[in-house]
Amino acid sequence: METNKILFEAIALHKCVVATYNRMVVTLAPHILYTRHDELFTDAVTLERDGQPPRELKLGTFKLAGLKDLALSPDRQFTRSELFEAQDPKYEGVTLFAVEAGQ
Image (cartoon, rainbow, N blue to C red; front, side, top):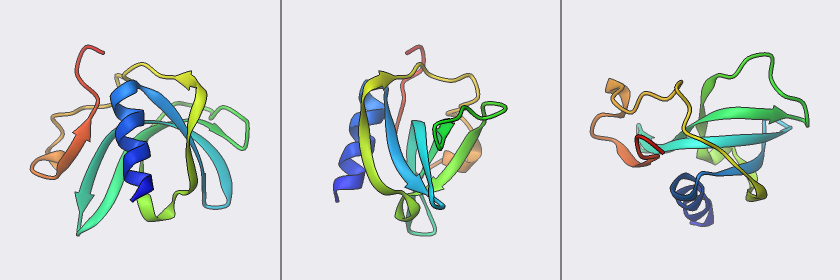
């Protein structure tokens, strides 16, 4: 599936992605790809919604099936957010790929 490939590349190379989610164009910094109830999810920091930065940075959960027109952002990279806790129990045994610590 193309979406998985894009997210693997984004996470590995710390590239942002752009997608439509709930009818809004979002720019995300994906930190982890994992499964829950046999569905794929990514936890990502939302950097923009419809071209505007959010009031506060948060790590959100996005169901991959809901991300439409997903693409790598050609010129935007991210650094690992302190909001992301790789050791969170919700990721135990279900993580497919995550940003490395210290990157």
